[in-house]
Image 1: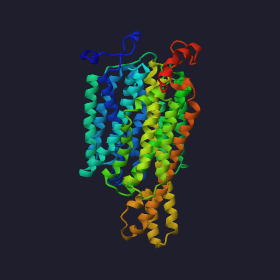
Image 2: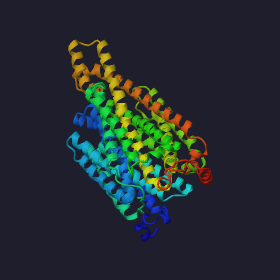
Image 3: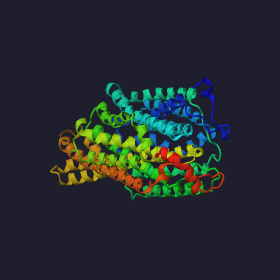
Image 4: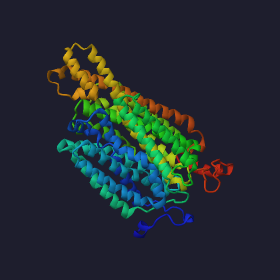
Length: 553
């Protein structure tokens, strides 16, 4: 690509079509998604260290990853609109800079509040990067084979970021204060911004797009209220008045969002997209699958680092290995995307995820060595990259190229919502169950009344994890094994919930992604001309060669 190509945008004339995806643009987009993804698992291996440093409660631990993921879930659609209006290149540059600022705030944090604020700002940067990087790739690859190759590299870059994120934090916390774990990502954010500014060939699709303030407000309120209710309900009880109110607000705001999008002249999300069966199915699958996958990772991090006090690097290795598996599939993934029907890839990947999650739950409670976890790790790694690659191709391939930004934003929205709900729900299920189980165990344990009173008070205030980590002198010899057993029971239940989500997603893939029409030919949805999403015989005939060339698109 020449220097003049680097400065050229794809916006001007619709007749010219999008600029072909150059190698430099693809590399820049992959670097951006890698940096954004690093931030998601970065805190996982050091949650225990943070908990001991700040004395965080079980609910507060769930907010640490949620603070990064929540802005991406809330603002995915907003940034999809802004990218279409003003160019995706600008958002990639802005995203890199925000990641840097957020990580520097975390690196200098002296309180849990500052840490969560920094996580939120870095997550804001990731929210700009996720849909923009995907839309740049999709807009520049109208041909099925080229898109399959580009999407496979994009997905592998995401997997690579997920792999090195825990290694960065684990290695850093092993040899220095945990705050330094965020400095490498701060530097990488700057590099990402610079590379995007220099090499990304811009693209946008402003037709029919505009700022949708009612939609932006209602979707933000809905997701924030939902996450608050799920996380805080584990501590305060789901029948508490303020938790019930939060759920009600989430539901009312979501209904308001649907109404706002239906009435808006320039909606963030065209609800007609969900009249395309394969797109609607992909959204549901993405939500459930990412919930299960990230929920499993969160449960594993709690077990290894917070309960059994493995070193940060030791705790990081299982996460790194799960994401290292996809890198081994680099030579075959593009061919799979071109030759295998997406339903086959999705179902196979989701079944592998469910099997890995069930296997992990079946392991003995005190299993912490890599050899014993190798089988579940392999299944989780293969399942994730197979599912994720096919899912991305289906979601963005089922709509017209003009709606690539919107489809990319919706894909990212459901993925990040699932990732936000994963730790929240697993925390609520696992730690809530553990607190109840420990209370039962304390009731039957042969302990002095005063000792039971102390242990019950700690359990009621901070949960079973607090009891497992509390320094209660000689009493800890009896209480720690009881608390660990209770947490293990709760985490196993959380893993079964994750496996159930993966199985339901697999069932949706089997039932909804049938026939060549769901292979991803972007038919219908020509809103500007007709507003009709039906597929005419002529459109189906025209789409057939493309569907045969690339089933997953």
